[in-house]
Length: 67
Image (cartoon, rainbow, N blue to C red):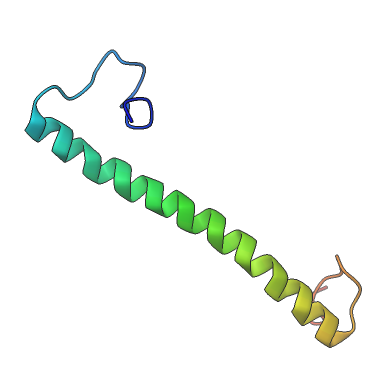
């Protein structure tokens, strides 16, 4: 777990237990946001494909109102 939670290149890292606890917060939030972004982009892709199939448009085409 040390590699997954390092702060940088190892030159500056929290040493005390309180410092490590404080550092976990921003890293946890950033990790969950990244995971949410990736998951959301992958899950929106099938929805777009199925919506295009319902409209009868070929894949890769723009929406009907777009120019």
